[in-house]
Amino acid sequence: VDFDKAINLEGYKKIFVKSKWSLVKLGDICDLIQGVVFDKKDKATEETDLKVLTASHIDLDEGKVRVESPIYLRPDLKIDEAKKLRKGDIFVCTSSGSLKHLGKFAYVDSDMDYYAGGFCAIIRPKDEKVLIPKYLASFMRYTDYYRNFVDRFKGSNINNLKLSDLEKFPIPLPPLDVQKKIVEEMERIEKEQEEKEKRINNLQKEIVEIIKNIENQGYNSVRIKDVKAFL
Image 1 (cartoon, rainbow, N blue to C red):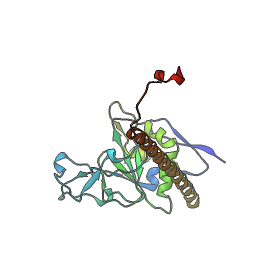
Image 2 (cartoon, one colour):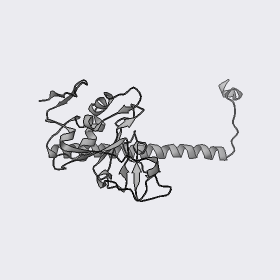
Image 3 (cartoon, helix red, strand yellow):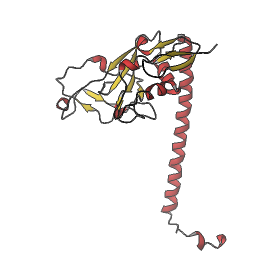
């Protein structure tokens, strides 16, 4: 039987999550890792092995990591390897002038040779035998609970989502086999969506080609009022 549960956010309105599964705080089952903070003097003038991704590399609409134009840091800097993005991580924006971008995140589907940058963080499940990373990402993306949670941290100028606040985000934790089924269903739906979007893009390209062919054949444009059939 479904029932409402709530976690008090100490001064913020309570978040209610309707679930028949036990609720747990994100910080109890995940490590939350602050991104690399660096100064301008730490930036390299050429490409190095120390590559950093920032909030601008998180695709808001698709929830994917974009690696174009990373920030390169000086090779002599010492950076904690835990801040490097790994398969199963959730790469999240924790500070933004836009509430729309605050909390946006991307699921990392393979190990990456990039570090999370400042104003970002990594959500990393402590034990995948307890929490499947893709299940967490699906819950955050396809329900309203996460967005409603983030919206409560609106600031007057810059919106900030502290790790200490993010740790309190409540999620339902079903058994592992249920998590797997949810992930499988989400992946099936996402695949169908990608195939449909690909089909739409191909049809749009065909339309453009048809128009170009018509133009190349030298048809003269006419005004509707000049065509007797419309008079």
